[in-house]
Length: 87
Length: 351
Figure 1 (cartoon, each protein chain N blue to C red):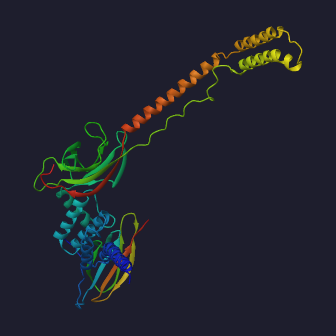
Figure 2 (spheres, rainbow over the protein chains, first blue to last red):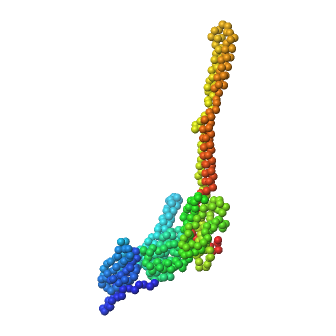
Figure 3 (tube, each protein chain N blue to C red):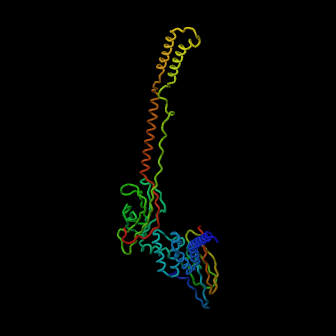
């Protein structure tokens, strides 16, 4: 299966190990990270630069899930209990 | 310990084990779904495969089996096992050609693969109610024929020994079709008690085409209820058709009693006196008047009542005829109980 391209990592002069982000939601939705679309849920082990990021999961007819998350270097962060609620 | 107690304990133990195994199949499915949602795909695949692998006595119901296969296919897809995902979806289409994964739960990459498999997998299935009670001629037994893609099929009903009973449908099915049977044989009589085979067969079988499917139907006749006859007419409500005989007999009795008194009383009341012979003439005259009275008051026909009764009798006869007709009709429309067994793949070559 062709996985959607992850959000490109910005230049990282200090060569810091990225965090890995996994996202799932019911119903499925479109994921964007820092305003950049990365594909539909589920997203598994998406490499992200350590630090705060704005995570948004949205779907037509549902209230979006919108949070700022903090990913540490080398951390595997999993957010799999997102339940989108109808508008 | 008495033998009966041991037997009871063993029975309870076996029953308990059976229940727990039955529960575990759906429990495994629930755990598999939770693991899928938590993105634990390896665990999800193992749990879902286990839930599907239970033996026939504890296996999942078809609706749960379809759910398990859908989650398994999605799981396999997300853990990069596309062939396994295709295999699971193919099983799903064979199980229920009309099933569709929930588009709220599963993202397009899953539902698109399912549609691809569905188009490539030509499957036929029956949807038959487990029990149908019908009155022949009046009501119908209905079976759904489901196909994954356009198929040209023949739906037949035969005795278990292969004797054909009816061809219920011949032609194309795009998605689903309801075939109906009125419970009758070609001779127009209600089907006898026994086992019948309902079969859907592709009209042009091919090696890679859909397999014929069949369901065994257990048919049992039940005699219908009939109406009781109307109660016979009595008086009342029937009216008397002749006047009473009592006044005539009263006149006769009075005449005869008086005549007897005329003849007998003088000799009783005046013993030793000569009674004249004239009393016999008087007695005879009185007796004759009694007979005259009897004939004058003899019963006669009451024409108005006779006419009223005739009309009541006609109405009663009509009621009786209506009941007889209704009962004959009910006996012609036999009640059938049709119990359907599980759907199976028909042997190749069996028609």
